[in-house]
Length: 166
Image (tube, rainbow, N blue to C red):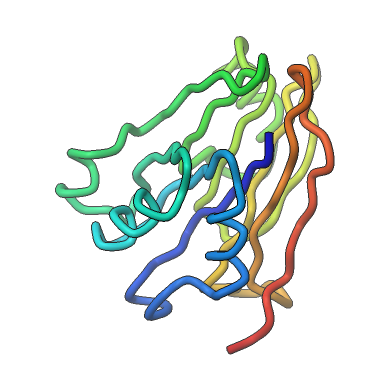
């Protein structure tokens, strides 16, 4: 099962649209995960239309219309892998321990908010993934997103993709 993980797209405020390589990855994926800060419903509609399966949550920059359509926390099982998605996890200090306590029954937590790619493991084995942002790199050298594979209940081949500057 091929996954695309993204967050903090901020369309149309930070970009008019998603970068073409991300759209191509979305269309090729079995599941697309978006960890919030869509900003506009049009992007949610476009991603829904162009993905086989979309799992998303709202972020702090998402207004009432998006909050009415998306949960604050999403939980899914993908080929035996237990995944939770949330936008904010709080400060980076003690993030792993805090998230492991908040999500004791999942294998992978996908989050956003910071625009900073993150891939760590908490005590007990919870994997924390932040794909960064494909449209607003902030202090990072590149805009980014993640791809991964799920095989037999395990997350494999996690890869950070750096996007070319527009």
